[in-house]
Image (cartoon, rainbow, N blue to C red; front, side, top):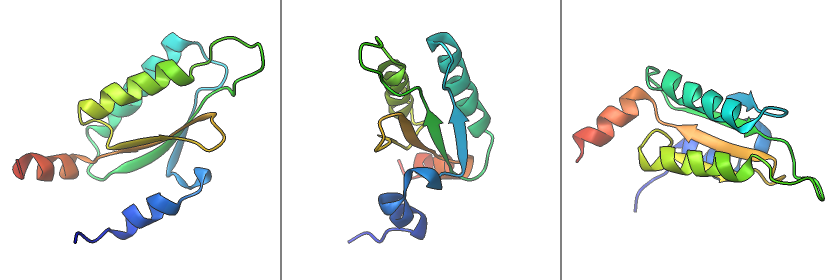
Length: 114
């Protein structure tokens, strides 16, 4: 049975405010949100250690139309498939996502085990 690291255990029981960083995308349009997420991932490629980020979005409003939740969620899912995001889950308040990105050292270890 595999043992969980302290960081993984904390992630299972963490509250929404427990990420290391926060990317506030409230009030921005889809194009700017996509660009900001792409920049966040690009910067992480050069960092040695994993990083957790809360991505904040405008909350849904009754009759308010489409929010960024679906387009941003799709982008994060695509980034997970590429290995740039290791974990992503919606916040309990449904106004964003809790995202974990691997560090450069973590990606190197995973590639070496294949």
